[in-house]
Image 1: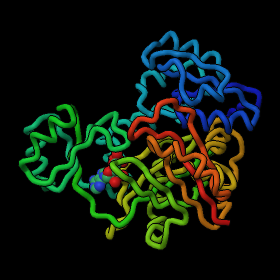
Image 2: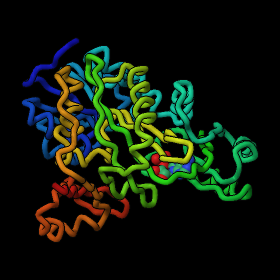
Image 3: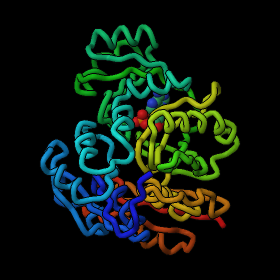
Length: 356
Ligand code: AMP
């Protein structure tokens, strides 16, 4: 097992707020970070001394970046796995390309999880309007059409209510490779966030109850409540099977619906996740620190709760302008991502509130 010692440089693909928080945790542990992103700058630039602007398909630039760092990780999973394989010929890449392959493709992801015995929404691949019409016949018209790739925060999705909605939904997602998912009736949403070390050790954080508004995470609350607690053994066992099957190293997030039939797997993110932001103050070791520890081959930190209860609220768009009011409550911890423009739906920061 290779250990990347403090003082080494961690390369991070993606320079957004997740890169910013990984870089902060890395610097606390004595590492330098080098961001690789297509943008000229971004939230991670404020805390990372090195930044390469480059395309994710530029083999030469990726190679030069990988040769200059000791390990590569990512905050952003929509990268061509071939690029990650190329990086792996020059440096250690954690998590590996297989995790990206599975997580990027909703159909591959669901098949992978079903093969492990997990429960998912009913689903059918859709490549054309004809496919969509037969998928609606098979699954029913209470369904959601999602682009197979590149979806996030509810983007690339169209709800279907009746068979006549097929054309509108197909157009709405841009007539591209998609999956039709049966609508899951659920009581709550939660995520299982685990960290798997380079030696295969796995630790879980408590599972937050997540509330989404318009497809975007609004709040995460811990403890998540009795219903979620009851579904955790099955959900955690599945998340661990996924991590083990991928020989995963780093933080892995699996999102679930808590349904009457048990936990229904929705999707995974092979990275630190918004629903784990509460761990920065609310857990003994944050998801960011343990991600760095894992990818560097270090021992993992305690994932236990550091408070009786924790709530994380996202600051979306203009919400971030309330920073002074937020700070006037001493129980609040404010995080702003340094983004200059507060567009609607844009994640500008978050606030975490502890009940000690
Ligand atoms: P996703 O991008 O897949 O995480 O979807 C965003 C949100 O839409 C989820 O967090 C759910 O609130 C809702 N959603 C997604 N898929 C389904 C489904 N199959 N059934 C019911 N609600 C869903």
